[in-house]
Length: 212
Image (cartoon, rainbow, N blue to C red):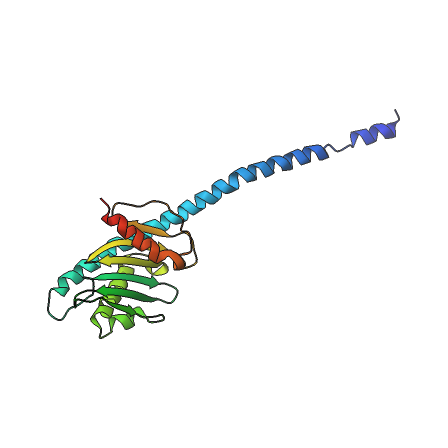
C-alpha cells in the first residue's frame, strides 16, 4: 500500500450510514406518536382543571352575594329577582352581562331579559330597575372578589336564592369549559364551545344539585 493510500485511509471520516439515520428517524416518529396524545390530554386536563377552579370560586362568591340580596329583599322596596329563576352570564370580551328571570309572583310566568348585548356592568348597577341593579351589583362584586374572574366568561344558575351551578371558560370559543355544582367537580370536555353550551351545562348541573 502506498503512502498516499495510507494517508487517505487515515483521513477517512466516520459517521452514520443511511440505514442508521432511517432507523433513528423511525424511532423518533414512534416516540412522537406516543407522546403527543399524552401531552395533548395533559394540556386539556390542566386547562379544564383551571376552569373548574374558577367556576367553583365564582359559585362561592355568587352564593355570598345572593345571600346578601336575600337579606335586602326582606326590606320594603327591594326586589332582586333571586326569589325566582335566574340565569346570569358575564361576557369578559365586552365587559357586559345578560340575565333572564322567570317569576311566578303574580300568578303567571314573566320572563325578563336584559340586556341583549353591549351594556356595561356599571349601567346595570345604576339602573332604575331593581332586578337589573341587583344583578349588576352581583356581577361587579363577584369580579372584585374573585381574582381573574373578569378575565373569564362565566355564568350562574340561581333559583330561590340558591346558586345551583356555575360555569366558566377563558373564551367563548373554547371547548375547555369548567363547571361547579354542590359537591361535584370533575373534568369534562364540552360537546360545543362555551357560547353554544353554557345554558345546557348550567341546567344539567342544576339538576345534579337536586339529585338525591
